[in-house]
Image 1 (cartoon, protein in one colour):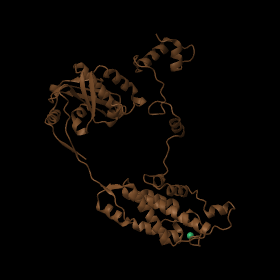
Image 2 (cartoon, rainbow, N blue to C red; image 1 turned 90 degrees about the horizontal axis):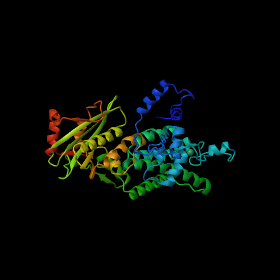
Image 3 (cartoon, rainbow, N blue to C red; image 1 turned 90 degrees about the vertical axis):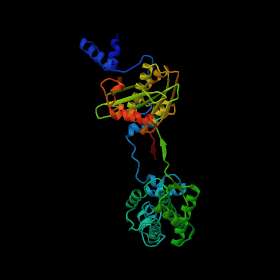
Image 4 (cartoon, rainbow, N blue to C red; image 1 turned 135 degrees about the vertical axis):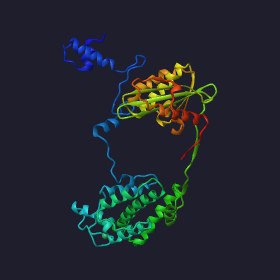
Length: 416
Ligand SMILES: [Zn+2]
């Protein structure tokens, strides 16, 4: 019997309204709640993936999704030059103390550009419209293999860079380094003229930029695809890089050891339902038993874990106590092998799995490629109304039999 006070607390029933109708309604709700008396209660902070409270996640929940500013990855990237990135960051945020700004604040009497001595020194002029720096940036773009008219708006030019300096390879690193180095050296040159009365020709600044980019790249051991346009690009900049060759892996269905059985598991999701499946085979590749399960649609991770649960239940039903579980989900593999912790949204399934694990004398886990897990994948498409349905293996259709035969024969698959 659930005390009336708990009814009020949990379901917010107005004080004194304990009518039979209300109580029945509450009992119905309680029956729908999934809990296991073997587990301890846990307070869950839904704002975080793990369910644990943290200030960082609370901030994210309160402020909504953090939208990354477009130019961020142009400035902050792997292999950046920190002093260059810092000046670029200020420039992108329009926080450099340009003379136009200083004039508005009454600190200087003239906002004239010291580089070309013909223009108002703001971001637009300093980096794009000034004849001195325009010549440098245009030359760098040509060296990058780009021929175009530079924008007259600083924001537009940054947007162009965002849309054209894409990817993770060596070429993008060079382009990003080049942009940051350009901003840094133009700003330094402007400072040298103002504070040291030293002026360098624009060709000298271009040379400094190229040298900084080149030296940083040589020290960073860049990698990129082995393609002719990339090789040519790097040759122009005088930078060597490591070619990334595509690794091709040969794989086939994994046989279990003689004293264990292989449990291939999988999960899938449709619009209105979720499915899970498991199949158990012995060391000769012979199918022992198979099962599938269905549930309301949840996350893919939840259905994959339901697959683990189905596989374990199936093994217990058949008296298999030494099992080898194979999954094509890296998330599930990491969870099972203790490399990660369960998200609160799948904690209830994870806890059930923890109890099932105790039933086995030996378990090992492997992550396999999808091609070698096709039998379990096929079982997940059933989506029955029950969460555990044992399948008559003599009723397998031709396609399933073909998959099982190919697995047994050790069919090889090539993976990039
Ligand atoms: Zn100028």
